[in-house]
Amino acid sequence: MKNLLCATLFFLPFCSEAGELVRNAVITEVASSSSNKDVFYVKLEGGSGPCANGSVEFPANKSQSEQSYNQAFSIALAAAMSGKKIRIHNYSNNECSGANFIGIYTK
Image 1 (cartoon, rainbow, N blue to C red):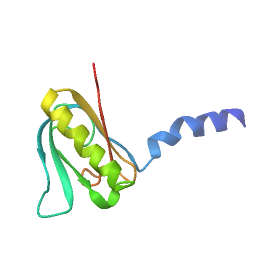
Image 2 (image 1 turned 90 degrees about the horizontal axis):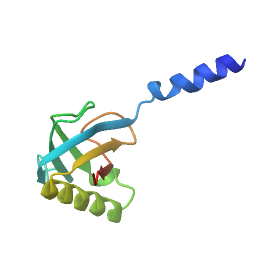
Image 3 (image 1 turned 180 degrees about the vertical axis):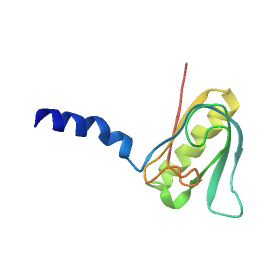
């Protein structure tokens, strides 16, 4: 029984529908909209994950709040201007068109 529980807990994260879209990428472009949608958009270079070397959209309606959305845009701008690497997450699925978290690495 303990082995079954351990195996289940080990494999559970691999079955998740939501997750990290990209890690260790550099933002090469930030735009206030994409295709006339209520999103902001980042173009990425490098990194790993399903959105590496691609682009990611942050829809306003997927953010936890307006403040959270504005913070994500500010973090994206800071990362683009500094050249620091970032990670981006989607709490709902693995689609690059629905991100709602961005973090910037300081080192």
